[in-house]
Image 1: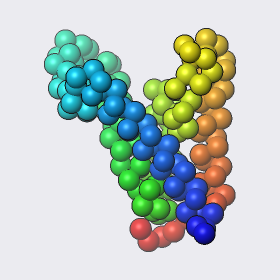
Image 2: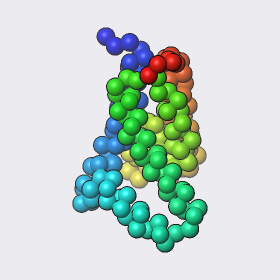
Image 3: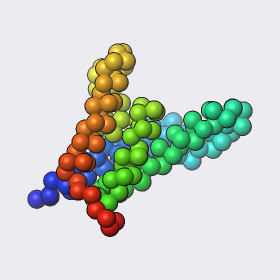
Image 4: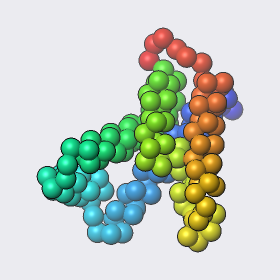
Length: 144
């Protein structure tokens, strides 16, 4: 039987791994190389954009990379990286990438929710749940 801390880390790791897997499957189904094609296309388009868009897109790629890293760390049950998991939350809110990645599957209907209030509420609930469970069930550790 896994300790509660391990279960919490594994659940959040599974959500991040699901997000990454879904991204990979979607890319492959569109005949793209996951992350590589998107990144090269991003670089091509950024030269045509202004500084604000470049910064916005750069932070989106930071979030994408951090989700891959956090999936690995969470599945490896590394509690010493709570700060890393918490740092993702503002970016998840800005880019609407909920920690409970099933929310974006359109579980509220075939086209997803048409209500901004419902989707925003689910996003906020997702992030609050992550903060609460990590804070309550995963003790902070000095060593990593």
